[in-house]
Amino acid sequence: MSFDNICKILAEKYPADFVRWLIGEESTDITVLKTELSLEPIRADSVIFIQAGNRILHIEFQTLTKSNPVIPFRMLDYYVRLKRLYRSSVTQSVIFLQETDDEIAFAEEYREESTVHRYRAVRMWEQDSSLFLDNSALLPLASLCRTDSPQELLSQVAQEIATIADRETRQNTAAYTEILAGLRFEKGLIRQLLSEDIMQESVIYQDILQKGNKQGEERVIIRLLNRRLGEIDLVLLERIKSLSIDRLDLLAEALLDFSNVSDLVTWLDRNVSS
Image (cartoon, rainbow, N blue to C red; front, side, top):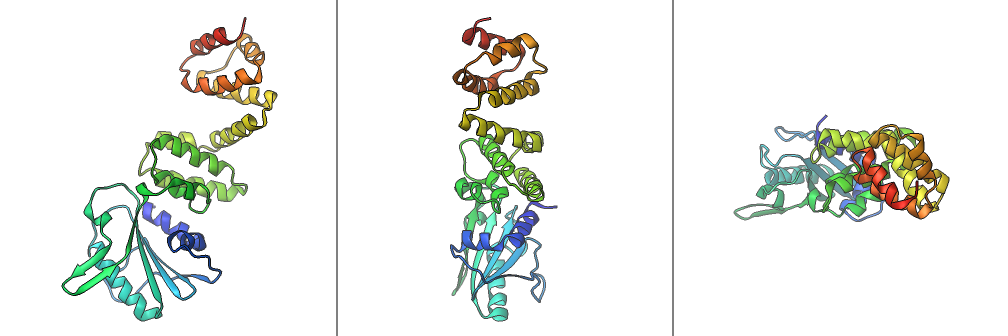
């Protein structure tokens, strides 16, 4: 399944969230319209039309900038057809998913002689991730947003997915995110961060840190160490358990840089007596 078709699925499942994002309106009168418009050659799988009150929201998702006909002309063509068919106001957004410097991604109008038609271009790599991280419907798009640390952003997305209570929704959201994140990340990293046990572990870990539960924090840290370094022997386990909760917090941060058991031993030698 293509990247842009995943976005279309999200818009069909959560039309009110896309209306809120792209139009800035709350509406209870929302209908997803069929995407077929008469007269070829205009028909694209990544197009969706949402009717919100007396307004049509036309969304087109694009992974690539090249198309035939070109995107600006296509937006004009769609606008005319939608206006003729529904006789409503029409708002149009083209959402570019993958970062590019192609001028088409920065164009927001079709212009020829006396004809000027404007639409909105949304470049996901310029978007603030907070809007998407705070909304489970838009969450799969968050990994494509603006960030100084893409890997940290993907980790945040994974943590948010893990907090979704409904199992089916959580799994679907993880699957959508895994596909879209492929536009930016290596498959190995995506699967590592989005595996269900890792996501849940991360959420539990954060919760434990916030609550200051020493016994629970020990369990999660030991589990993380076992996963990262292999089975930890009993002597080292006892040394870890002797740490105060403040030292456990320090170990939780330090273990992310450990590459072998000797790193753990060195850290313990500095922070707890034998």
